[in-house]
Structure formats: structure tokens, C-alpha cells
Length: 327
Image (tube, rainbow, N blue to C red; front, side, top):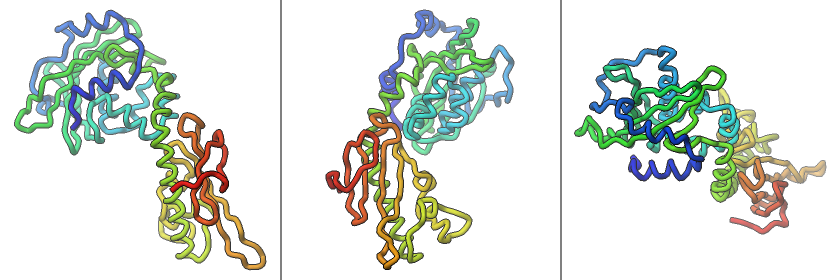
């Protein structure tokens, strides 16, 4: 389990938000709104499936945290504003998971369990293979279409310390949008995914490019296995995917992301070349190009029909065999 203090700092730095309302600072110090100082809530009564309208922000935040714990993108995105949702959908899968991790301060996907304090305030316990955290929600400060909720996050990984470690206090804000409550801020910072989208993509360019070259080699190895098995080349990458049974139409050699032709910010394409009526053996070329040039990658990769790999900056266009060879 990652140290809570370090992750808390990463949350503030990485999310790169703008300042929140000054009133939030005073609210975060209001002991009457803070989560109750009580042991870990594993023995607390179950939280009702539906909450009263006055508790709708707390219920929304509870469900968002549970989704973040499980890395459940479909549920998590329900609590994003329309502006943030649009950007969230464009992030790479890895970036979407990184964002959800920061809400619960745990690395791996976990199993969330919901409970409530004796006064009915909700809590979420997130248990992963490497540790556990409990997130206790305080009272809601509702101001028209804005709701402020304090959260105490405790490390409850140690079975010998069921009350958990010292809590970290975070104030979260939600905004009412189209009659639903959406996450607006974390701590003193606004959640502004459009501003972060470009920065995150640029930060991951190096990893995306290395991953694209690795994926290209993985695809080539699958094609060669297919050729040895069926004595011909697959007509498309889709033939290398999984089906109800192994066959020439579903060889089970590649994961769905690669057979679909797009993975981690790169698009992949296969072209069969070299075959003719005189019996020349068919060969193939492979390409990998950035899905969004300068954001998900700059280099275009190309595997020529001799099995050599090349890389060059083509402004997002397809590479060719004249580009420098890469290993």
C-alpha cells in the first residue's frame, strides 16, 4: 500500500486544479461537520440502498468512492460533470485508472464495502490485495447547487490496529448538474480534466511510444504463429482474436484491444503485400500511428516485409521503410 502522505501530495500536485472557494477552508475545520471519531466501520449497520434527497450529495460521493476503489469506469464516470466526462473518455485506460486511484489513495483495484455510522453518515471501506483504507464522510454543507463534504481517510491495513492510523482530512465538493450530483473538487482544488488531459497525455508519450513498438512486435509474432498454423496469412487483425473456439477466423492469439486496432494511444494496421499470380509468397507490413499526434505519441512505427522495425516523426502519418531502424 502506498504511503498515505506521499499519495496525498501526489493528489494535489498531479491533478493540477485551480483554487476552490475560500469558504471551504473554514468549513474543513468545522468539527460539527467532520466525520465522527470512531473505530473502523466494519461492524456498522449497512447503508440503505437509497438515501433521502437531503443526503443525495453524500450518497453520490459514497458511490463515486466505491467505483474508484473497484476501478469501475462505467460507474465512476456517472459522477463526472459533462465537461470532465468528455475529457475522461479521451484519456488512455492507464490514465483513467490513475485518476481513480487518487480518490482512495490505493494502488490496486479493490473490493468496496459500504457501511454507516450510528448517526447514518456513510463510509466506504476499500480492501485490496496490498492494503485497505476506510473513507468516512462527514456532514453535508449544502449551498444551493454546491455541496461540501469532509472525508477522513484512514489506513486500516493492519489487522492489529482495527481503528486504523491517523486520519487524513480532505474536503470534497460536488455540484448539481441536470438534477444529479457530480464531483467538482478535491481538497482546495477544482477537478478540471480538460486542462489536465493534454498534460497527462504528453507526460505519457514516451511510455506510449515504447508500448506501441512492443505491441507491433506482439502482433507480428501472432501473425507468424497464424501463418505456421494455417499456412497462410490472416486477412485482418480480427482473425487473430478470440472466439467461441479456436479456428482460422478466431485464432486466439491476440487480446481484443490489439485485434480492434487501437491500444494505449496508438492505432495499428496490417497490409498484405508481395503475393502475385506467379506464386510469390505473401508478405505483410505493419504500422502503428499515434491516435492523437503530439498528445498520445509523436513517432510512427513501421514493420517492413523483411521484419525490420522503423520509427520516424510523420506528424501522425504512416511510417515507412526509409525511417531509421529501431530494435
